Image (cartoon, rainbow, N blue to C red; front, side, top):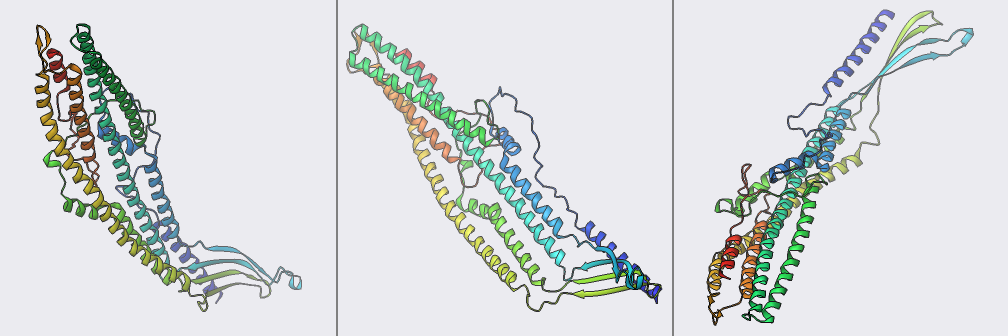
Length: 462
């Protein structure tokens, strides 16, 4: 009988240890082929001597933006929770001594015990599945943050590109104003222009100088924002290479973009992942009242009987009063809230899409109108410039002075600058894409009047 009890105890202890090792191996985290990289110390960025493209800035942002490192860390936090939730409970072991000193002996019983809790109803599997779903949700949130970073970089890039173009246009206008002021002074000296003409030329020169300084300050501000989004705060201003014109192939169809948005947006995917997690959490709470089994085995020496003995006990907690009713009610409410969140996000995305796509279509209509004005502007400028004719007596009667020609020229350039700003809004579309931009797209000047050719022609006429 004693040998049989010892054999049963050994078998129970072996089964406990085997089960613990098996569940420890099964609970090891599995790798994911698209897992975000761990944050590392990245080398400093070399000074750029060639124009920067949007692809380079996007790559820098993905490597250095701290919000992506935070989102990647959240994924590993959830993976750690999944690992801990799936591990089997550790066994307990200890020494037992009963009735020590009875009748001058060491005690009635001296020995050791091993105790193990056996989890029932698949509680560990459900707990692990719940946190694995949470890790998947964290991965989708990382993907959503990646889209936010890329969208911010693209928006900041085109804002900086627009202001860079505006600086170039205003520099051309400054040259034009200098030439007009010099010519007007010469005409005043020979009596072919009066003081009001000279004053008008000086006022226009000061105005365009102020506009150039304002454009340069705005460009520096947009450049700092772009460098911050790229994760390189000390990046020196560098020329940007990109294009602002939008071709017919780049135009977006509202229904197609909306369908693609609702199918691929990480925000909806995160909400659906939250529903799956809450469903698993509800299942886990519903099996919580099913009691686990507690097994305890003992072996030792009975000094009263002077023989080796063994014992075993099995017990469980009875769910009489607490049947986990409160946690089950909470889990059901969280599941209902998550299902309503999906509907809320769907409606919010549709509303925001309607607003943004309306702005996109309005910008396209404004661009078409400005393109017509830009096509007519050079023709009108040539006609006006043709009125500046030299004659032996000076300016021919009915012709305009250089200051008037420069004023018209400046309005044409201003129209081109406004068209440049409107084209930049075409790139802030709701899909987060860059129409017509491929990895091999080079820099291109926005369509409009040729500033250099117009100024040279005006100088020859004057």
